[in-house]
Image (cartoon, rainbow, N blue to C red):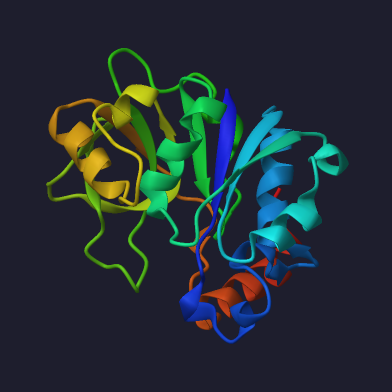
Length: 227
């Protein structure tokens, strides 16, 4: 299975830090966020990665190279001046990906064991989502989860972590251009074709200076980076 890291976003809420570098290159515990993810994926056995590039993408390519430093092979999917959003960015990269494939948001901090995803989704499912308890900034959550099935509505709601495994058929009928991923996931959930899990370990969507500082404090308290 190949893995894709979404790294094309502008990171507006982290300005002025992101005025000079892309959000995935913001350092935590002495390493860029995206390097933490690459090392975790490599440790889990993922060897072929695709990274999409948008805002300051040249800096990301220069920092990561071909991936050899990290024991992986990195291919790139450059996007046009107008970023394609999550759905459009993944759709553009489909020819470079396996079926199924893993996708991770490039601004996620986590100790999730990615090796657990190597055999998912199963059966007729189009997606397997890693969900987390709702953080204070997103109390309503995104999806419900019951007996390992992701549902668009329900009483026990969780937040989508930005980590998922997808079949290429999830994007059937899509066209090149800018579009979000969330409606495709909701459609799969409504059709009963999305599995999921609730992860209780370390996780953060590092989208603001406050959450960046909190994640840095958490890593210092843990004695370093997530393993």
